[in-house]
Image 1 (spheres, helix red, strand yellow):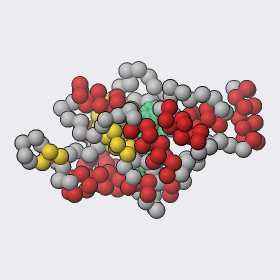
Image 2 (image 1 turned 45 degrees about the vertical axis):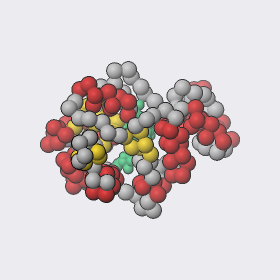
Image 3 (image 1 turned 135 degrees about the vertical axis):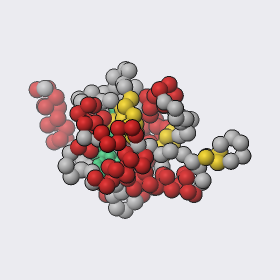
Image 4 (image 1 turned 60 degrees about the vertical axis):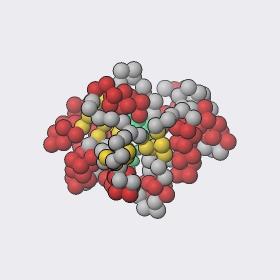
Length: 217
Ligand SMILES: Nc1ncnc2c1ncn2[C@@H]1O[C@H](COP(=O)(O)OP(=O)(O)OP(=O)(O)O)[C@@H](O)[C@H]1O
Ligand SMILES: NC(=O)c1ccc[n+]([C@@H]2O[C@H](COP(=O)(O)O)[C@@H](O)[C@H]2O)c1
């Protein structure tokens, strides 16, 4: 999705792309099926280190003891890049500020209309102050996802998936539990890391149950 966003920025916007950060959520989020933050940071690092010259991993969010809402995470990036580092080199001896934006899939943006998931204050902060690039995702009606976000429409940039990629981390974890191949779906160094650390393996009962479910559907 970062590469789709980069192409969108280059060919369909007036923005200049400075960099991209992966910011794994902290363990305090307690989402079922997630590996520890330490492992997720390591996997993100392996995924970008050997494959990208512009993507980076930021470890502030994953090391937080308490869950940090997305608005706070964006504030963290804004503070570090624009206040601490005073933006980026403008090429003429001065520095210029950087616009921080949230890159998300349409399914995440759809949750912004679900009562109780995002506070109105956070939505205004994220979409009003920063803005978002949204990648279409199969299974999510983008118009429906954006319907209640019209007040911020000028700050929301929709990225079409020209080649549909329906990979999901839940599906990857499911394949791994079923001992199915995920090669070419995620980077090979990440696959090796998962194998070395025995991540996403379940006990025999769960495996048996899933195999049965797999056979019936
Ligand atoms: N195939 C995809 N197309 C578009 N956006 C995606 C895709 N996979 C992940 N994303 C987006 O990446 C971000 C991080 O997603 P997350 O880590 O929750 O993985 P996920 O694949 O969405 O997980 P799940 O399998 O639980 O839905 C979210 O904004 C999500 O919408
Ligand atoms: N209120 C919020 O700030 C809020 C709500 C839901 C998801 N999120 C973020 O979205 C990302 C993806 O979350 P899910 O995997 O639960 O869809 C996470 O980084 C999470 O922190 C933030």
